[in-house]
Structure formats: C-alpha cells, structure tokens
Amino acid sequence: MSADHSDSADDTALGLRERKKRATRNALADAALRMAADRGIENVTVEAVTDAVGVSVRTFFNYFPCLEDAITRPNHDNAERTRRAVLNAPEELTALNALREAIGQELAHIEEDHERWELQMAVLRESPALLSGFLAARGADERALVAAVAERLGRDPDTDLRPRLLALATIAAVRASVELWVASGRTRTFQSIYREAFASLAAGLSD
Image 1: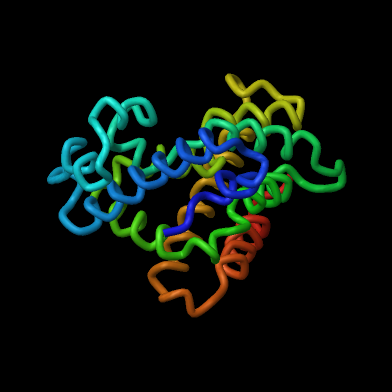
Image 2: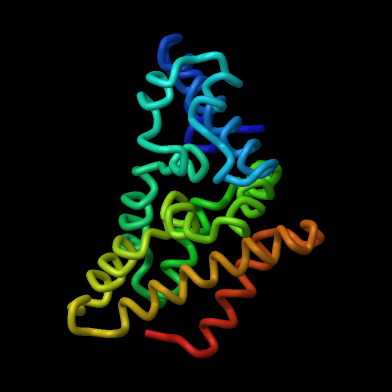
C-alpha cells in the first residue's frame, strides 16, 4: 500500500534514519488498517499490529497515541495548509470555492492511493465514530475550517451561522464524494464526483 503523498513527496531529501522512521510508521498504519478491514477494529490490538510488523508495542506508541490514529493517519500539517489555502485563495472566489480548492489539493493524490482509501472506507462503514478523525486528517477539520472561513469572510464564528454552515457543508461534500467514488468501484474519477458535489452545493450556497 502506498504512503500518503505528503509522506512520500520529499523522501529523497530525508536522511536514512528519517526514512526508516517513516517506513516503520507506514508499515504500522498499513497493518492496523488491513486488520481492521479484515476483522473489525474492535478485534484488533496494538500487540497484534506490532507482532505483524516485528516491532515493540513501545515503538507503536512512539508513532501513534492510539490504534484509531494508526488507521486514520492524522497529519497535523493538513489543517494548517488548508487554512492558509482558504485565506490566500483569490478574492474573486466564493468561500465555498476556496474551500473546494483547498481541500481538493489535499486529496489530489487519492486516485494513486485507491487501495488504502477503499480499505479505510470499509473500516469507517463499520466504525463511523472514526469518521471525524479521518476527515480531519485530510484537511477537513471542522474547527479549523470554521475559523478559516470566518476569517476570510470577516465574520465572528461564535455568533454568525454562515462560516459554520459553509464548513459543515464542505465536510459533507468531501464525505459524500469519497463514499460514492468507492461505492461505484471507481468507475468515475474522484475529482469529477468531487467537483459535482461542490457544484450542487454552490447552487444553494454563495457568499
């Protein structure tokens, strides 16, 4: 299974030690995901994952605070990249379109990594409580999006409905796009579904 594009983009610039650490992290995440897809996350233990990879339980917790994080693979840089992209988007773009472009960039490599996405969606169908963490790991973090939209629009996120509505509608569009792409057997490209979802939202949402 391939690694996140953010993990693999600059491998050549990393030292040997860092590449080994990244490979271990990816191996643990892959093993956890495969086991969760095969037997259900409730039947997976950290011990089983580390045995499969050949490392210690202590090593697992050097990379992930819990089993769920190994499956969702949070990347804490995603939310900050998305925030900057929303704020730096051209002024002529609506906030909704700025969100579409920002998160779309985070999902640009989804087609190349379809096997992992399919496994993750299978796990999420059985364990929907993981969904918010999964989407946040891809830049669709609810609080970060609400704050970014509010800042872009110059509105107060605590008193104005619009930033929250736009952020939550965006998260729904991302979720629906991924689910349909996987459920349809990838007969359409993800980006075509993703853009259709946002076009539908735009018909009822504008700045």
